[in-house]
Length: 283
Ligand SMILES: Nc1ncnc2c1ncn2[C@@H]1O[C@H](COP(=O)(O)OP(=O)(O)OP(=O)(O)O)[C@@H](O)[C@H]1O
Image (tube, rainbow, N blue to C red; front, side, top):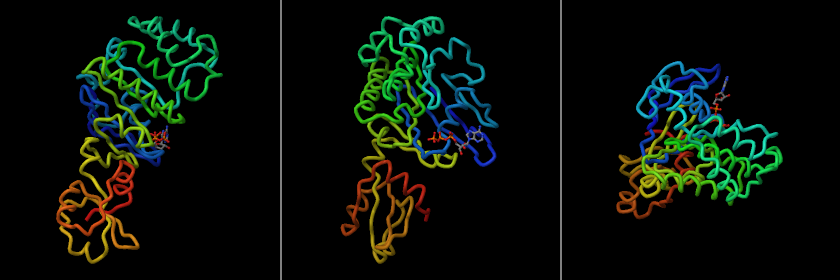
């Protein structure tokens, strides 16, 4: 559905070099700290910046050759953009009817009602959560096959975030060939919804894994110096020195549980993996 192959973009003090693949029927997450390159990746996909190199394929076509009709099959939420605060939901619906031939005004207004978004209030008077929901409803409003969502949950409380993630689950359930690329700097936002995750750090993809595998097979081992010295390290991905000895990231926690009963094995969430991938050292 979406493929980036060695897409590069050079700024003064930053270089993006990104390869990733969003399969049909999948929600793919892009996790990274502030400034890691998430928005730059989205802008490159959308043609809002011109990459210096690499190849971007969207729905089987070179990104540069997409027609207007192809582009209408893509729904977008960008982190720093929104619609004019002086419009209302009703105005927005009228505007979208003009943009998208297959915009379903009735369904859009019904979804806004369900999300408790007032029709006649100016958007500048909406809360952060209301604005975020409206941005997503706009992205969902015109029968898309691919959603590109850059930090759609930024600034939301737990309830608003869960409502928004539920909207995405519903979107995927309606058609098994739809796909989503979603970014966040809060990994727990993505843990529960994504099929696979890419981690980006300083412009580079440093890690990619299926979420199920990440949550079931990865762990951080805590071992003292002696144990570490004797340990079989073939499944250790990263190591970090600690006061007590070492923390070690593995993708084979079962192996260490069976062979090293004394090792403390902490089930790792995405945050632990990110920390170890960034701060740990390769052996
Ligand atoms: N137009 C530009 N000119 C120069 N540098 C830029 C430009 N746009 C982005 N950058 C730099 O590229 C880097 C990546 O920025 P980007 O916005 O992609 O990060 P991000 O992962 O989306 O961060 P955040 O989570 O804070 O939104 C940053 O160091 C930023 O300063």
